[in-house]
Length: 73
Image 1 (cartoon, rainbow, N blue to C red):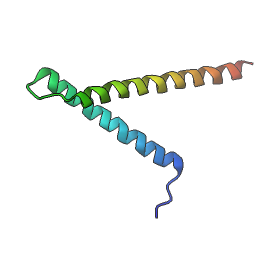
Image 2: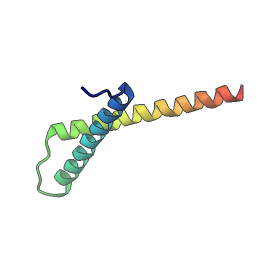
Image 3: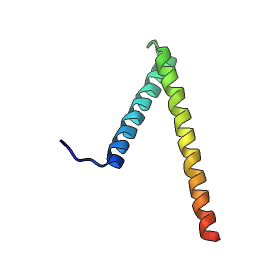
Image 4: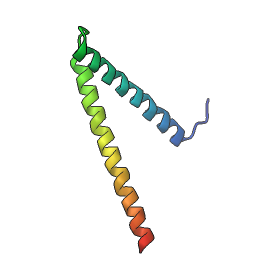
């Protein structure tokens, strides 16, 4: 049994989900600009992924602002 830390496992899962999102973006582009059919699940995955990235990015910005505020005071 492997002894990976929770942080390492979480990072692996995040990278895997990111790669799935990239595949969804590429498939969506193929569907838009070629005769390749686009599935509704691809569009949904792309939109959900973009929403998750937005929430994570906003959380990181807020966390950094909080850390800066703590350093000032």
